[in-house]
Length: 547
Image (tube, rainbow, N blue to C red; front, side, top):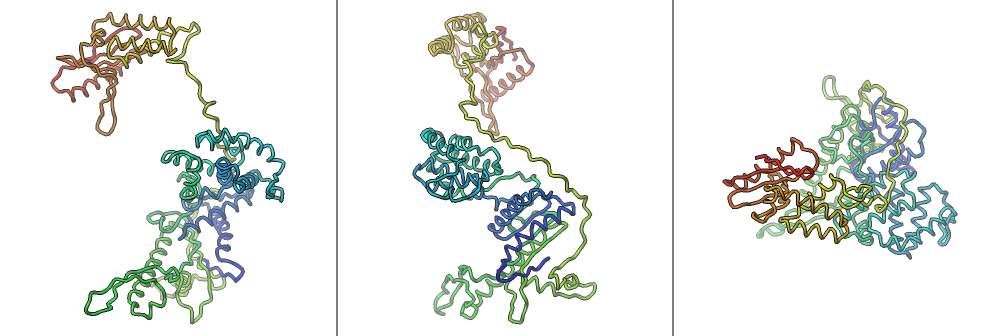
């Protein structure tokens, strides 16, 4: 545990942010991995500061052989990334072409992404660096097209135009932003102005989602670390007040203002003046509870570590006037604690007054896992417009050079028409409709009609379409748990039920078991009725009775 002394010109937070990378390097040299390390803080903004500091340090020290990747739900906000700021500004320009602030923000963030030096040309109202002039013309030419695009396609089109997929260095943030757009579309009307309003109100809180197994330092609040454990824990901000009256929290307490009447319940702002008032008891109880909360917080933070605990607190010179007002004051007092032999730990034996450092224990023997950094793998985020990703498939399968559907494709086509047809009349009407829609030619219509006629020569097949029974096609049967089965055809006759499944392709053993399952399900519903099960192989015009 280190007590850090600062002067008027140096802030404790700045010292901590400079120290943490050195601490991590020392741990990596001891054989620990990044995922073994957790940095615990009290406030979300502290987590964000630490994450920013590590990312900045990593950028400035790319070739020192160490990694400084961090993982935090409290810190990696999408809005911190230049690529997200650039996209939001571009969307603002599409929403309002007269928004000069959005336009200038767009070019500044794009310059940062492309590492173009900042100068007066970039910041002046009506000027741009030469590198951007062609892009500006292209952007404004495409504005009419952009305004007609769905929101998700608009985002992808801007990414493609500005080439944010290449070398942005913030692909995780780019992916997180696209996920945020996708989530917004799923729950709201997908218009651009609505999204921009949502982002201002809620979206800005979104963070990068990184898999838990990723080798990175965990940064989280002490509160969220309850129940978790890590090989190494760093506690850099042991500086909070034991009882903070500056927040003026409200407490409700009883007040006996008239002995003849029940006590009143009054709200009080917690201030130090209450200690010398009629509400001193309530004040002292609140003081006690806050001290207990601070001790509990310390207990949680100090008991998350399995092997190494590194703690840091600000140092202030003690004097008679000083009281234990902060956690740092309390820990400084603990360092002076002495104990007789065989009793409690004598902290003062392990505390170096000159270094202001408490050091206890020996390092675990870990095999050094420090290796040469693997080459970064390019992530495939390249956008391809949806209209270029689709290929128009000819209706009902591939066609041969003769423009006549193959035998297998004919079977599939007959199957699809039969699924929709309760009677022979339905079949021919559906066939005629397909012909008029241009889905099939006259020659193909005649061939399909001929194949259906051939099937109707089979007596049992003909009975399925002659109208003698009530027909249910593609009728879903729901099972416990939400699953459902869908037989091709169920025919209710006066004295029995027929369950039929039409198949294309070769005969398989699984076909029979599938029909048996359908029959069992129908039996469970229609108890007492005899049920027949059939498989009809369309290409070969054969029918197999299963049960």
